Length: 565
Image (cartoon, rainbow, N blue to C red; front, side):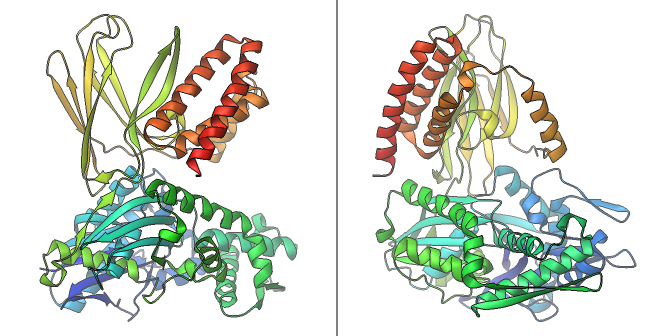
């Protein structure tokens, strides 16, 4: 029985199978390799998927949805006529359509799949993707990171050659960067970074906004159908700019024609903020992998958005050479997922290839720190740091913080920020402990993280040996813009504490950034410095605050030099 490889994309999806020693892209019912990740209802109330649904984005925007992958793992809902769907529901319709295409092509049922996800997908997003597969009638044997899949597709060509790969994956809605090493038939992920809210759609929206400003169109006043039409025109213009230096965007609204001519240089200037956002994950991945750009043997572009000249120019400038493009950037992830399926099936043609992966985020718990009688709450303590090779199981011991404490509420978080409020909460685990003075009872907390990004928590009370285990399954809701506005209004009424003076806020922000960039002992050191500084701020000793501020600035200068050396 075949296991299929699926690239579930923001803009387009496709499916591939390992057959006769090679990855074979399976065409959909229309004969196309790519199936638009668009879902809608037709006039009879039946589900439409792919190109047909995409055609109705303009004509029936109220019952058609795209770009839902960006909200996988959230509580966002999409009302379509008499139905309400979550992102994983819509994704399952796309997966089901791909499943039917493969079954028609192969002539037999398909029940198992390897599905690719962005390397920087969170725990909740990965769980939602697995759920979507299950809703589509597929047993999801494994989730594979998109850059890892791309490297696997390239590396399988000659698995005996030692190389460092840099995978630059810019899709419709997400950006991932991964550093991998191929050594003696082992493909090992060294580091991953990315931005789950940066992709080709951002460039499209930026140009659409620019167009409206230049031709004096109120973008907010456009109907959904009109804006969909504008996006289509802008999308065509971006594709055309990959071939031509100058293009003209044409848009008709309410029988009025609007035209705007733009050059490739003007478009690149417009997109500079997005290009700068692409640089940061690249720098982090190289730093975490402990290699320099010159150490990268092969640059691989993945995702349709990498066809933009400004993206290829950025990569060439960063690494001083042109990237590899001999595999179709739209298809390479699906091909790699099929290679992983072949490995799962123990295909003899792939017997020499071994694949490893890493945790894209740090995983840890909320702790309380006590120094000189000052209790600092809401701190993040990583147990598994980002880019730890998985599968992994690691345990750390923690002590109680209150006298006669009878329960420990273990709050699990994912992220890189020093404070848990800036990370993603994954869940809670409540554990009973014997009542003793603070610090005299302890729990061992074990995090086990597998290749599918599934996190298991095991807590052992040291004195009793009692164990409690949980698998993270919760899904967080999204905070709306209205809720954010209400929260900001409430905060504006709070009296400003001395710790919030501009100079101190700048120093704290710098320290938080360095904490996110650092790892291991250096990260712990920065965290201790920030905790000490917060303690000084809490006592509101202006003279001491100034002294610590100067000393801490110098220390951060040293840390900054070390990080970028």
